[in-house]
Picture 1: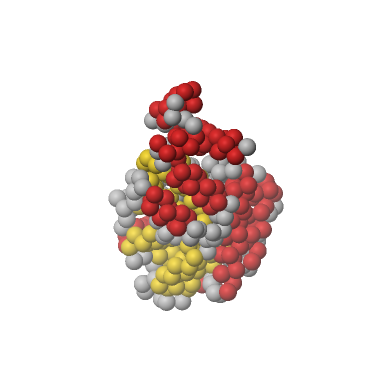
Picture 2 (picture 1 turned 90 degrees about the vertical axis):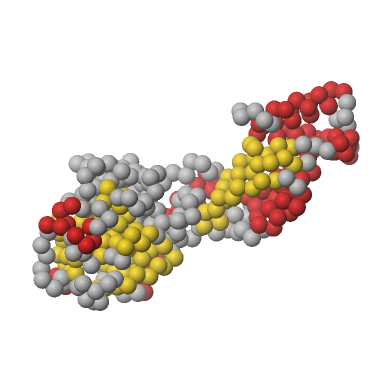
Length: 372
């Protein structure tokens, strides 16, 4: 029997430029924390090895400190780690991997699969058929040679590769690197561990994507897992268990605000979120000034509660009622002209967001002036 953890797409060094520096710092650290959880899990479950199927690093130019921190995060598991270069960290002549070697931080039990070929693990009676990417994009199937590789009789045949299974995944996947959907069968593999798709995906009984260990985008495709794979005997069907290791859940909500009840429903949904959530909120529709203020307050209260939040209210138009205009003293005169101009500008692609924010600020200032 052989048992291993399958993981991929750690993207260590990812830059979260869409968020504030404080939010980005937490999301960056979460990727290291998830690696440490994988190491702890590997020890607790007494697996034989951990296979990382590409994109360990997000880019070749990550800092030396990031490289050192990554290998430091592996120390919680003293068994073998097998790390495969993907399209983001391809095994170029000069790469993040060659720098790691020069830094001397590669652990003795961390094996870098920098060349295509077979790694024989005699103590496990297992042969790893490895297809690292040696350039960012390839247009030939790098796993094609698996079909021709001979391995010792009675050994498990486990493939490790990084790319897009032909005809299976969505067209907007990151990489162009093709992999035949029939590779596990044609190469007589017991299991094919893949990376590149950032969610758990079962291609067939012997071919799996583990997905990224820590969610990094607003896509509901089961990210944040590692796969615990057990194969009883060569030729036996693999037993695959999904184990959550990610800390943060990313949500994309598209809300249409038309009536006050929509605002109340949104507020109730927002109240369910906490420190483990990352939210992308896109709002549209037309609402009264008071409802728009209530939405804005709810968003800001949520921002203080969740790990990170991006809110887009560009398409949410503020339409003050007659009562609200009277309260603001904007039914006639210069102020009425200002309000009318701001309402009109809300439909402008460039100035719409600023116009909506200006209306809310105007209401705030007028209330303060009235109170004084």
